[in-house]
Image 1: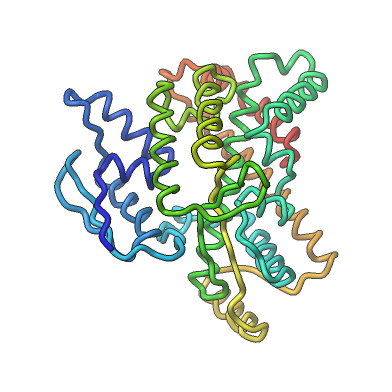
Image 2: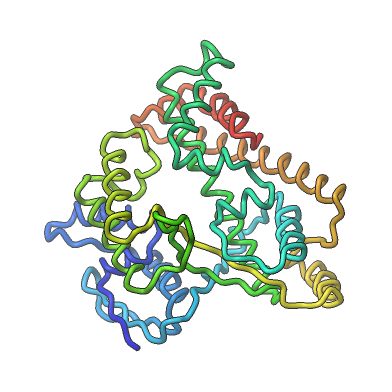
Length: 359
């Protein structure tokens, strides 16, 4: 079966928030109103589409590109990533790899779960942290506690800082998990699949999306972005009036047209080697420096892993925050940009991490 997508259809159907934002920016700057992407982003987009098709060929140039897709996969596969963390390993890679393998060993079978669910199940973050992105009541409670605890430091304007911290760290943890699944699958220790699921509004049951639903919901999201005059990269600003309108309209249409409360990217994983094989793989991969983990954790060992993870992750989050403060652009006139220029960003960001219990 052959599917042909225009560049615009491919970006909105398979691209991430960064690609969509870049495409929309070029569209507004184009005299013809045609969006485009640079070669690096196109190459990355092809890899995104290859998660769903056996073969992807690009024809044409510029905004006129078409993507010829052959062989629809039964299940989406993980995106191949050859960057090797841009030359550096995660400081908490040993802990996160080990905890994923430990969970898969102790829980059989594992139904496909959202990355948020994986974060909670593994103990990497609390349900309060993962749901605060979507549920304003939880976020409001966290912010009220912050204002009470840090009177004189945290004010009403800092609500956007809490939203920013939640979005930044949740995305980081999700990307860390994707990378972990990719590495373990590449080492042939696990089998890993990606599939889109929806929560049925009436019953609360979950089921995979059909191809038709997947396409239609992607088009609905694009339409809602255009109607509310926002970019996909703005969706974390849930207190913004246009973003609020987007989420209200999108949720209403999702229920009315498809019967879903929400949809999500689900990840399934299963161990595909014996314990003896794991030991052999572990030694070989350690020597090659490709993958670092342990397995067979008892309760005490797992607790030490979690302590090690939280310590390393919190330090890493602060290092990233300091880097963002140092690299602030003069043209960034937002409240966050103001905090960075005044040297207040890192201090306030640390308080947000403490409220989210990841520091």
